[in-house]
Length: 362
Image (cartoon, rainbow, N blue to C red):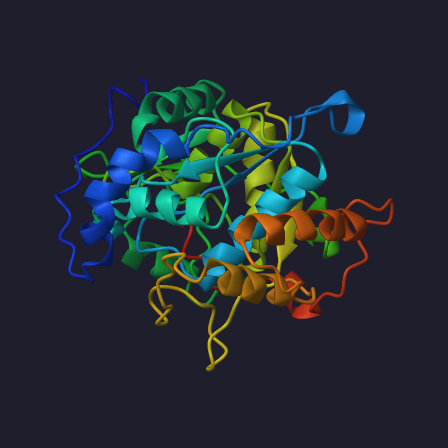
């Protein structure tokens, strides 16, 4: 039986109670979106990167609010890495969680990025339009016996994990050999078998190991509300877009090993990874919509770019326009991150520790 045949109930309509920032900009940004997704005339022509493979990077925001200082850092770093490799930079909108999304924000994010001079080199990919591809990947895993239906509730997962030597909320495969047939809602999970710890090299943090079976467990591929989980969608789309390099915040470092495990389960290529320090507020919390991040509109684009540049460890160039700033920044980024000893930048060792709380893919 396929994932399409037993997809579970449809999610309820989302109710959004947030600022009107995105809605006010939606109409104008929608009209501009076609032009913004095209390659600008002065964009660097993509060339062959390492091992004869064309470099392709991406920035993949979720439209849960406007662009802010933290997301600008990720966007800028990923764009610079692509340009430093004479490669392509793509925008992907991760709009697969309607209850958390704000109407109009996706187009506003694209428009704001353009004001910073950050244009996608290909049409924007919208995850909300790619359900068939995620279903095909899930079907493949089911055919291989690598995924299964799970009727456990969050409360039951917590109870199963209580008192165990593993961290809280690690799913232990209760439904691997069958679940309660009377239940009307279920999720789909990946079967993570106990193996040696999965190791990968991060371009900033160096060698990272994680025992995915012990530290993560059988993680969700499709939620019980029928929404696709981030882990499956990101792996499928990175492969579909031929992404060679992922540059993102260190808050996603913990997700990388499970994504590589899923890539291997689907026989997909694994990109290189570069995780950079996240922006934090005055209380030390990761800057986000939930922690009071101020929306960026690009009205003061050079100053906001320079602030992101300083967070990445560089001195501000004193440019007078976004284009001049970007021309200055690319060779400096290339000098730091394209050396043979690329794992050399200053790094906070705390970024390599894996927290017990994992909101994605649980």
